[in-house]
Length: 601
Ligand code: GCB
Image (tube, protein in one colour):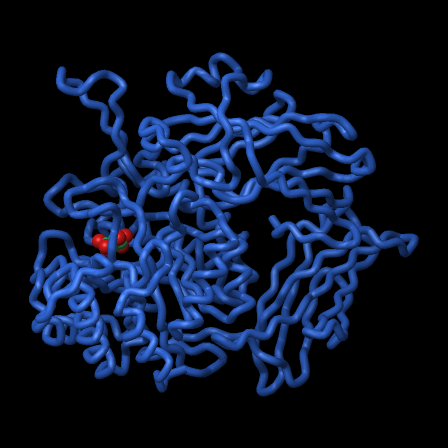
């Protein structure tokens, strides 16, 4: 599924704006066929946005179950002989779409796009109604995983449903990314797969164009930034050799444009699609992560798609600000913790040369060892694994051509100590490598909850041998030995060395940080103050600098973000280096100084 781009043969119409919206309080929308006529009794809701923080109604904010969206739109008459597609950037977490009462597509998974061909059901030159039912319920077989708790005692009324076992971010819901109408020709370029390599000073681009229908010929032009043709290719499959190629480098991105044209027998143009292409290579050694043959050190963050009022709704304003802040602070990378981010964010990372670890929404697949195992047939394996595989397929299908993506993260903090989890993850890893042999693969590991945490858990060994990079989240002096900053050098160094010694692979610190309330000060530092966050980061960095197998530091988190209400969260997670409004805490200046003067690439 290609990202929608306009061309001589394609049009894109954005349906963003105000939609009609209704909460399905009694879960009756499907039974009463709400899609068959205008919804009625609706309120206004912006799209894209999470619906949770838009109103003053606590019920809407915390609703678990279905909500319904609706909008009237027109399709121009001259689109009649073409193919019209309705494409949803994402809807969290499961959605069904009807056009004029006819179902056109349904989709499971809240962070990836889906589309339906609506050419047969749409009225050209007339009003049409699109209806979406969106469900935010999570269970053992969804990603993220969650469980809905319904209590049966007299102190909790019936229908009192709470999402439990969910991860540390708010379950924002709704239509989060743009809904678009796309016009393509009936015979069209359906997909393109591009991989790149470097041969001394030349760049190599291998490509495969997939056409839906038949075209007499396919012509390829590779254009440079000024629009000049660099090299020309013929056919659906081929290789472009670019003399003295300009490379896609971290923080110094060069993008070519690959122009694909499909022609009919009589020489007329059928379809045109243009894809930005960055030439770069990725490799790992036992101690290094190489981009274009040079050791790359990850400086940056675990992030979230999260901001005031719009929740997880796509917003170009916030995204542009975030990239500007990353540039300002000297970061070169981030992880899409804990789900694939919008295509618009990935496009921006391509343009700006920000390296991305692309994470799938497999989060919440962890529990404390004392509890019953979760990787069992009834809980996750089987049906859950099928969904995980499907999400990986869709994610790789969507992001495979982004030069910014260097590594797939298949999960965050799972119970990888459970024996059955190894079989489970091995299957996901194998499928990922089969679908994309060009990128690195990892799973982000954590301390076994309730254990000391300074030993690489023996049972996590099993999984590490299948990964390219060992990624670990570590919270010394926060969750472990809280307040005891002086233990960081000892514990971190010991821990990191153990991972390297056991697995002989580069180690990336994917999370470390401290909740910090902006404006709270105390010296000598105590937890939650700005001084504590600074001192903690400094001690982590001094330790990392001694380790030649450490390939990077991703601070948790880029900005403060919303979570569910818990006694350990004061209006959300406050580990941000920036506040939720994107203002710097003191630690931002410490990081800026470190990262701007960093000797590594
Ligand atoms: C973690 C999780 C992340 C949490 C973070 C925290 O290990 O990966 O989702 O937000 O810790 O702050 O507790």
